[in-house]
Amino acid sequence: MIFTVAIDGPAAAGKGTIARAVASRFGFAHLDTGLLYRAVGAKGGDPVQAAQSLTEADLARDDLRTLAAGQAASKVAAIPEVRAALADFQRRFARREGGAVLDGRDICTVICPEAEVKLYVTASAETRAHRRWLEVGGDEAQVLAEVRERDARDMARRDAPLRAAEDALVLDTTALSVEAAVARALAVVEARLGRPGG
Ligand code: CDP
Image (cartoon, rainbow, N blue to C red; front, side):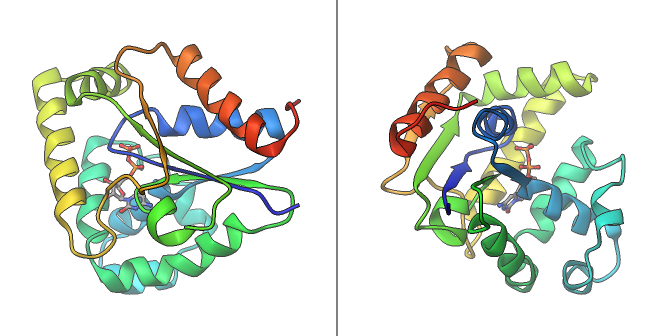
């Protein structure tokens, strides 16, 4: 069975939590595509070369979740040759046998427009920054500033800018608990798949 759940949205919107829950419920493979860009940014040197030669070890680094790694990721993500180098891997992953969930910025719009389920997960910048601050700590105002800076860069870039696909279901999690947001996503996938998970 080929079945893709594509999830896009701005920084710290809760895409990863929803993606993991969907993958686990329906037995699909999950790819956090942000990790690819974080690994390219963290590698240093020429980003295009880094993207072309990315390895499992690069993705296993333990410093990819920091705010600095997020900023570096969104800078290299604006380079078309970097995106091109990562596209095939993501497309093959999306259409692999057994079902796949991918979360990122351009999964519904560019990587897998044919996805069976498309979600755009979002929340207010303040809510997202607060959630990210609970994970990374530090100065909450600075976390908010970084979230805004990254969103602006991701939405303004020419190649694959962040935007909701026209046929994506928008899930605004500002006023939703994690459980409620996950439950909505699971219900959408279940309806399209025609069977309950697990
Ligand atoms: O977890 P969070 O939402 O903060 O970020 P992420 O998903 O790990 O993505 C880090 C950065 O990679 C984003 O700010 C984007 O610039 C870039 N990215 C992208 O351009 N396209 C994707 N499919 C995924 C991430």
